[in-house]
Amino acid sequence: MRCSFYKVIARNEVTKQTQLEQLNEEIIQCRKCPRLVRWREEVALVKRKAYRDQEYWGRPVPGFGDPMARVLVVGLAPGAHGSNRTGRQFTGDGSGRFLYPALHRAGFANQPSAESRSDGLILKDMYITASGRCAPPANKPTPEELNNCQPFLESEIEFLSPRVIVCLGRIAFERILRIYSARSNGWKFGHGAAYRLENGPWILCSYHPSQQNTLTGKLTMEMFDEIWKNARKLTES
Ligand code: SF4
Image 1 (cartoon, rainbow, N blue to C red):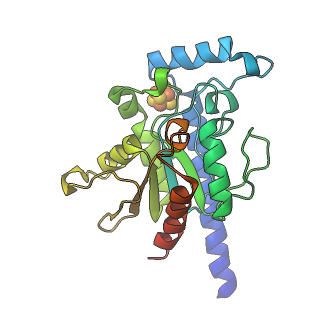
Image 2: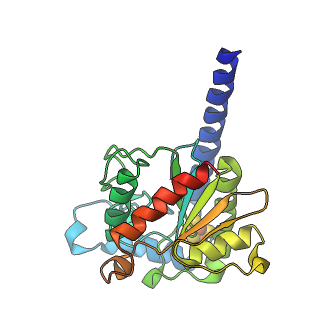
Image 3: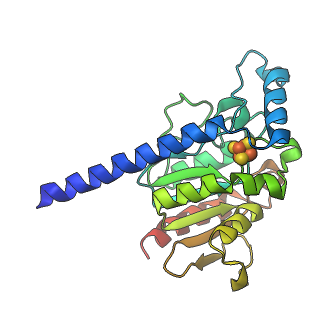
């Protein structure tokens, strides 16, 4: 009996992993937003001086993490010289240098650093994705571009069935409300705010770990640690 229980768990994990891998293949090929395709490829060609010897990813950035994750983290979109360069969410930029140490302290990541896709980073009980998969000019995707990208996020939610969705920033929060058609609940974005969807996951809000927030003290390490502590607690409720 016990043995068949573990077999079911293992089968479930393989299915989710396969679904996510197939989805990621699809994401990487996407060229639906002409403005973003132009921008991500131009940035990858011109490069920042400090990274001129590196080959930029220059494509949509897929989600990554634990296929059995109970916590789904949703960011905004790739940074031009961060994940548009490295090809992995929050990898190689200032936001990631604030995010991953916090995830490591909270036990969601095996290491505090994230500099490339081959750095050995493993997430446990967590999957990280974004509202938009392509780096936008001035970090601002248009509503139409986010709408184009939304089905990818919907599929990830469907495959993972997370218990907690952590929204990094207001745009991610609004996108999640839109997906769940929960706009009418009158829920407001605020750091630390948590809402329970009926028969669905918790939605937990956090300020985005952008340098604009972390260097100005709007988001401190202590504030961020509280988010991950709460995320873990909510997975059990
Ligand atoms: S933002 Fe999303 S929908 Fe638009 S091109 Fe990139 S992956 Fe495709």
